[in-house]
Length: 258
Image 1 (cartoon, rainbow, N blue to C red):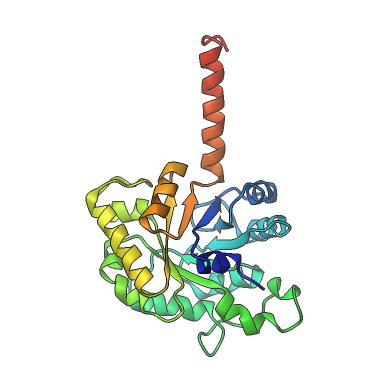
Image 2: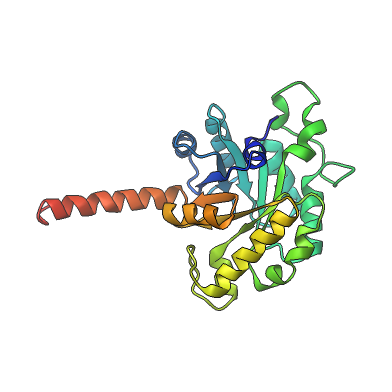
């Protein structure tokens, strides 16, 4: 197995990530052909379940995108299960302490680096028999989310955990935890200062910083800030935005008759 996200990051370029909340292989297939480098199935806030995630993986497999998953929580059962199904990266929400980061890595890595149970039911079907276990620890990415005051306070300790590939900022929850309105594209000085710190600390350690964004313009700006992985909305929002814009244009150009 070769993780294309790792290759892009190693080349010094940024990864543009798609996001799937709709439980549909067809939606995944469309996004996989839209130019994204990776596509993440959201098991936390999307309406996906495990079987729809597998369907999405199958639909994306014919296309050059790296499949990743945001799991619902920092729990060994689901982390091992999404990796067994073929996730090349696991984004884990609400990792707030070094201890929680250590637990996350242990759930995602095979011995001796972790305690992941052996049984790659789907991902093990590809390549030569038995090879997945020899490369999985290095090729799969463990990515905790930084989205609370507590996580920011413990940032350096979280990043110092062996096996952490990078971190992923959830701007809505991060702002929420600081008493701000939950939203994606943040402009508040205190939020931008946190972004700068996360970028600086990850760069110092050879890791990467990722962020969820609400517009292409902000995603491009985030890359300019130093973020190495940017997510553009999700399939639901992209579809809704295009539909609303189209309907609005029809009504405007038809004089409001339509």
